Amino acid sequence: MTDAEIDYATVFQTLPGMVALLTPDLVYADANEEFLRMSGRKREDLIGRYLFDVFPDNPNHDDATGMRNLETSLLRVLATGERDTMALQRYDVQIPDRPGHWEERYWSPVNVPVLGADGKVVLLVHRVEEVTELIRARRAADDGQTRVLEAELYRRAGELQEVNERLRQAHAREREVAVALQEAMLPAPRQPAHHLAAVRYRPAVGALNVCGDWYDLVDLVGGDRIGVSVGDVVGHGLEAACVMGQLRSALSAASRVAEGPAQALNVLGRYAHVVDGAESATAVTTFVDFDRHTVTYSSAGHPPPVLLHADGRVEFLDRATDPPLDARPDPLPRPQAVTAFDDGATLVLYTDGLIERRREDIDTGLHRLARSLALHRELDPETLADAVLRELLPPEGATDDTALVVVRL
Image (cartoon, rainbow, N blue to C red; front, side):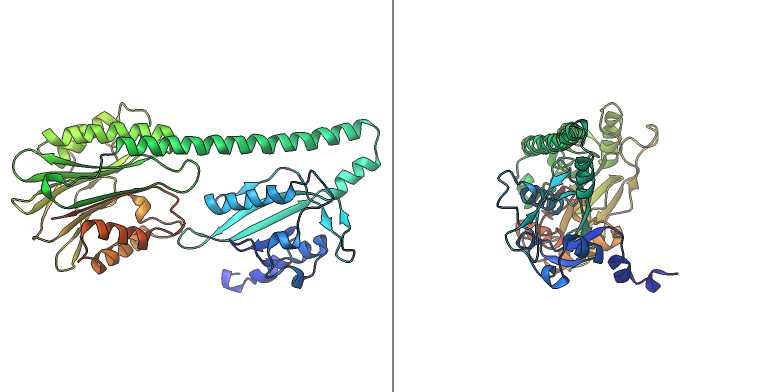
């Protein structure tokens, strides 16, 4: 049987557990039969209604936290695009045909995102396992010890949730420190050798998915020349930010004395071998010679730079691609290639957060970038950089950080 022959709507309705679908606004989009049966609600009571209008907290229970805890979990899934398993919750439910009367209920919820082609959360799967009968059975068989064990289980579930929340807050603080460190180590925006250039860095959404990407622009000796580079460190958080700073500084120094970008990457590759956390890091560097109107480039496992010609033609600089920095034997020289440009062309370097999306071929992202650049080729670098980010990054932010450099040649 193929996917086209499977009636997924019927499968959803007959799932043995309680499952509901929520929109990003926390409005019910659908619920299966088991969810309706166990919650004591009809479909028209749920679909199109806000979750907490249907299931508010019990106003007679002073310590009720079910609604707040569930909302926190759902918003976390929306922000991170990651599954969240909640601790055991007491969440009382109002009896449908007896307004003002509430029934004590216990639940074990799991919230899972459904992602669209652009990586954006389009739906939330809210799966619930009710454990009320288990709690009641233990109470009915009360031998003294059972109540103690039940109270201990519930207390520990609450403690676990508090610990998880403290960990998330600690991760959020680490993210703030990592972003600040990243911004401090990246070079301040400037115009190299009086040429127009724009740089952008966008941290990823989520607690720690930041700080692996970097960029650099340097003035080279010997004529009107500049070096333009970007790179990406595998990993996130403070460690990735520190490794990023080391690699950026090393390549910046190597570029000033190297004969070409391939030699600069050779030096950086040898350095990466002795830097913990630099495994599988990627980089691409270009030497722009304004006197000769050439761009010489070399890539270590990085997405190709783009040369946007003045007539709108888009050229991906992909003829000198090699493995990541620490993934090749030292004696072998890295490749490099040269391409020519006319006045008014634009050189664009970027990291994979700009073009890569989940469940999407990378060529799709490259084509999207090429279309955006061609469409906005008349704009100055600053405005062009903003337009590209606006069109290619999801409105709520990407799940990977992004660096972008735009230089008018």
